[in-house]
Length: 147
Image (tube, rainbow, N blue to C red; front, side):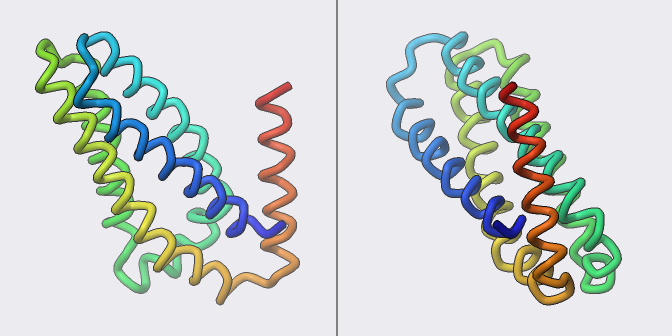
């Protein structure tokens, strides 16, 4: 499996999680529940983001800089991280809900840009063999995390 296929599959899972959060959030009754959802999202995004950074963004950074996209992807990462961090310090339920929805919306937008820009770029500039080897590395990392 190519790394781009693996990461796209993870994006599908994330979109399902985002859908769940958006559906559940209006009915959440406590600040602690919102913070728990944010922590789950943050934990999953950290693992996914590290994989993307190490296996895809790092090798493509030069290309992303050339097309003027490197800074915007970094900005999006910071925006998502900041929203999730602010959920942790929120004192009121409506504020926490709004911040978590901001993080979900920013994440959806970010994933869309990755799927339109980064993954096709990887497919264009990396050899299939390289993409498959990176996919194997992804699989080994996932297996090590679950062991």
